[in-house]
View 1 (cartoon, rainbow, N blue to C red):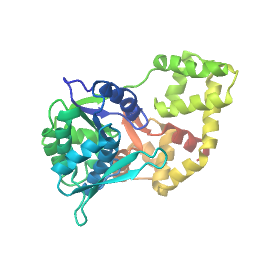
View 2 (view 1 turned 120 degrees about the vertical axis):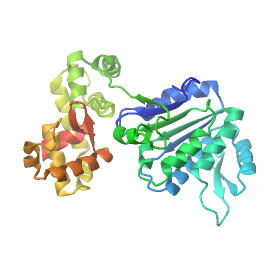
View 3 (view 1 turned 90 degrees about the horizontal axis):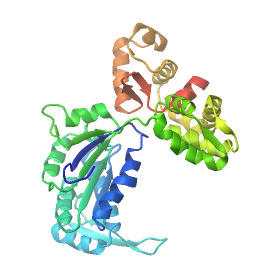
View 4 (view 1 turned 45 degrees about the horizontal axis):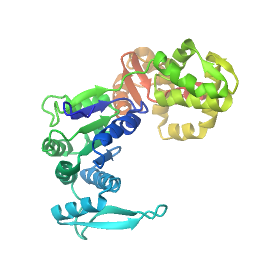
Length: 350
């Protein structure tokens, strides 16, 4: 993914599909095997609302990346020579006693602009290699000037410095990277994390179940992944529940899926109630009906509107807001809830 041939990636996939885990467990170790002391900056942009938020996240991520190298002190000296208003701070990790550095700013100065830190990566990359990963990148879309500033900063990076922009909202990423005239139009190669099949999952699940004297067959595996809308985190939660509650159960069947789901809903009931409690009664009603009729191919149909009590215009606006917040996803089969376990909980208790 981060070879010299393709060093600009737009990595898409729904939440809880394992994008971040894949980057951390596969891509970064592979990159570090070739650049042992590389500066690897991983920035989480979830929820940013203004340019200063972006800069703050970059500054924090930059400090973490520096401390993860063997040459932290040298890097800090290089940065302070380049950025006049930076005053590094040193503290000590309370557990290890190792020194830790952070990028402080002279009193009276604002945050270091994220574009400045991206430019700094280009200089450091020449000496030891660098990798930039930006998670939930789509959240910059509503911030004035952000896309243009990112375009200016990213296009100045050397071609062999890999950059990965990740996101969980494909429709917003399309507006950022594919819409004609958008500042970042046609930047990067789009990659989407694919759906894991039952055949792919089966060996992994049976490896986890074998130590407790249980197993699962392909038919039940297929039923499980469909019940969990192919979301790996939800699928793995069922496996975890089985590990804790189905010792020496032999071959597990679809009844075991129902038992696991029921058990998980009991364990997480307070979390689900808190989650649903953030919504208005109108949104709660729409989510409940959606959970019962999923997937919904026509949310503005007469039958769906009648079940929810909304007008066609009100439903269209609400669907767009829920999609922008990744509470629902628009799949080829129709609209579904992003969290399949929330769907099971709504169907069971509402």
